[in-house]
Image (cartoon, rainbow, N blue to C red; front, side):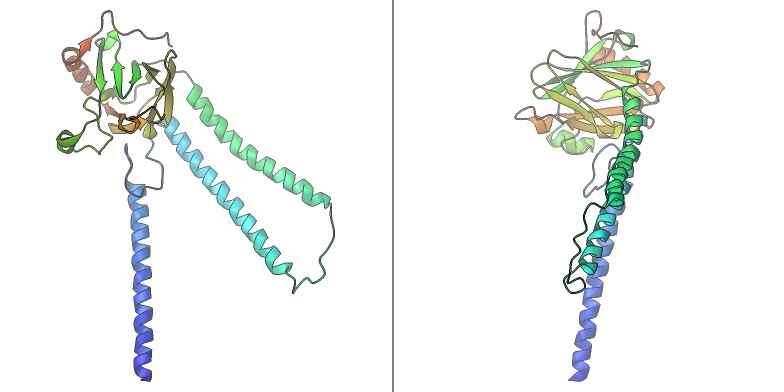
Amino acid sequence: MGMARAQDRSTGRGFWGRAAALAATGLLGSVTAATAAGVGQPVPWQMDLQVPVTAVATEIYNFHHLLNWIMLVVVLFVLALLIAVVVKFNETKNPTPSRTTHNTMLEVAWTIVPVLILVAIAIPSFRVLRTQLSDPKADLMVKVIGHAWYWSYEYPEAVGGFKFDANLLEGEDQVKSGQPKLLATDNEVVVPVNKIVKIQVTAADVMHSWAMPSFGFKIDAIPGRLNQFWFKAEREGVYHGQCSELCGQRHAYMPITVKVVSEQAFQAWTAEAKTKFARTDGGPKFAEAK
């Protein structure tokens, strides 16, 4: 009987050990998959930001991780203080509590330390903001118009002066394309790699928001107003985004697809687009930009 009980205990330990190992393996596998993927689109169980492909997105990515480390240090420090208080000042070890108040050094410390933390956060924050608000000379302008519920795009006369609509790719078309569900469009925005692209965004009906996580920005599309942003994609590929402003019934079905290609491929695409898409008389109208 004693041998049977010992065997049961051993079996139990083995079972829980295997379960813990499997759980750890699954967790590590999920983390690895989340950090290894996410280029231009989300992946299941992703816990990190998408891989940045612009300078702005890279700065945001680094700033995000800096904040996580700062928060971790603060949380561990507060946890250590709580544990110290519970252990040192409980009723058993400290039956007669101290009534000391107004500790000058302590009050100075808990005022100065948070200020220093905020300064450490503010410096990289301002650096990111400066990069976002810089206004470099554009190599290409693209006008984006939000509709309920799809996007339309206009290219300037310099590259053909055409416009087209981009709708959600659904059903068999989406399956055949091999693109992610609810993120693919029938027509893609095509831009050249390592070129400064300025996006001018507005809306024809209600408020929308043109958001591209891998590019590190989203910009509101407001009727009667023209907003502008820029990016320079440093990596070829297909990148997906969505409308991030709750704009109505089919808000969840307004995907964005941007294809970043080489200069030669971009020239070939614009030559084809001139005949494939509708031309605009005199070319689309763009606000004056540097």
